[in-house]
Length: 601
Image (cartoon, rainbow, N blue to C red; front, side, top):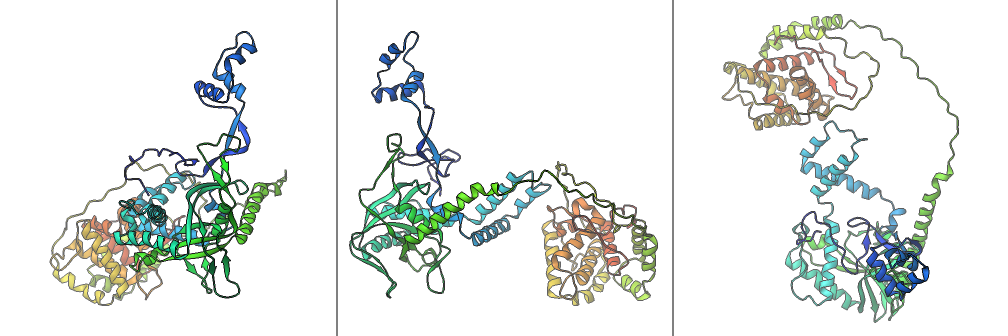
């Protein structure tokens, strides 16, 4: 959640009483009880510190002998080293060391997919990227996707609920804290949350002793701000049977506010909350900490003015889904057994200790066993021309008649087949080529919609009707996507009023392709079929454009002139007869040919 009065990009300033942190919102720095460092500060600050400590610098300089003056250096020597700072963990993150993060990881992956779906243009930044050398760029794309998906909304909304409870504790005076529109909270919802919080305290006879107090736990090496210390003025009971948990009247306990979704198990107990008892135990066994006065004998630490239970704590849970559904603010009080939290904390510390020594379990041998890779056997030459000619000559008269009925000149097919036969073999095993990082593309390829060419052919349109009748829903959906993209690119494919030669060639080609390569009736998945169609387009417009993520097949179709449209139709026709064999590139893309420039349309 951002402050509406903070200048964008401005570095937040630490307020009095707040922890010093690593980075903008990183883990806290805590003054060490044992570690020291050379005294810092300006000369004036060190002299002032010495005088505040009762050191007579002038007398010390005179006693030291000739040439010694009152200075910051002298003050630093007399004061001695100052306490060093150490980075402590957040109590809320301790459970991550031993928790099962599978569901969290899967949620984050889904959020990235959702964010990219909302703004697919972000994928353009992936063109030519090296995932090993450009991790920062990839991290930035992931962060942007999370932002688009609103991944931080739930956490920020939880922080806002904490602010609302503080406003309620202060008497709900004035307007409530600013609510980000992304939280989807109405004024009635905001009031219900605050009133519900106060009613929860009243219903359970709890009185607040402290709020948002800084706490440090040197045993756990963790520090943070706990939500509340409360005292129970009457006995609290959780459960009704012999296993009921009891908190005696007059007990001071930690209360933590949670807004994360509660997923009850078969017994109605929370799932995925394994880290919470550890967090609460860390708070309950910590001491107060003053970050503005942490240089004295106790380094900012002091005991609480009351005894906090290390056996019991409670969670005040707000049901956010119910609130957003209009069911009201539903607060629940949930008991937490801190003896379980202690077991968890000890397990966390043991895991951290293991992590620090894990590498010492290994030792490397000074010897290596090396076996050279075998030289591949030479590949026998395949006479591609003879193979293709044999297949092409097997076309029956019925095949040729079907092509003619679709408006395809057999001379077109003869020219395409001859060109394919002249190409070097495309599926022989070749020695692997070194993988090199591609040079950055200075300028992405561009497309422009082509105006319709050729005469109007009303009779040719009728030849397509039998083909249309055979298409299923999946095939028609693919055709609709292609046509819609072409229309958006400025070159529609409608034939009712504009059955030009160019449009007929394009529509015949894509309808034939859909009938053969898309749908339940064949073995090609939609994604595989899309790749095969791009391979067809690569023969016509070249691989740079056909395989560019910047253009959809429909956009490329919109750019074809009448000659290119005829060529596309001819390549599709040959594919349907098995007169062309398809190979694959090293990265798995289908490839029909890469050297057909001499083919006549």
